[in-house]
Length: 165
Image 1 (cartoon, rainbow, N blue to C red):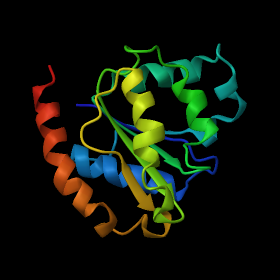
Image 2: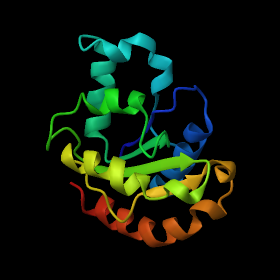
Image 3: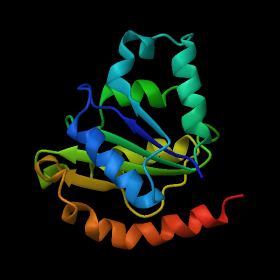
Image 4: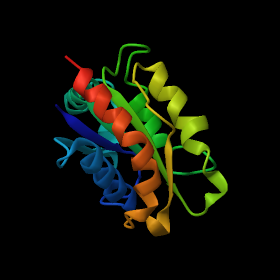
């Protein structure tokens, strides 16, 4: 099983990265095999001929489980994450389970993962089990902020992973 994390925070080594890595570890049972902190790619993310970005898209697309994470900006995910997601072919770009995770300053935008990120992940081929996860960023390092969601969704993810060829 291959687990990946894709983080669309424009700041490297962000709280969003920490939250996504924690969630992927909880769901996959080990540290993720691939961590893509999009902020580290610089202008390469804008170059559709860049081989590093193309390779990352291929690896993420083939992963069994991918946590896609973003801070919430204007009730949506970041443009940085959008640039990366635009690289995936509709309906076939992702082959595994896709987990939408968004962090924000208050519960006011708690529907953002469902309304903004989930539809894109399903459109590009990801299987999104359960609802997207929203975490108030001041609680990004509090396991209790994830506990209820994990209790409901982790068993579904486990069953789906076991059923994969």
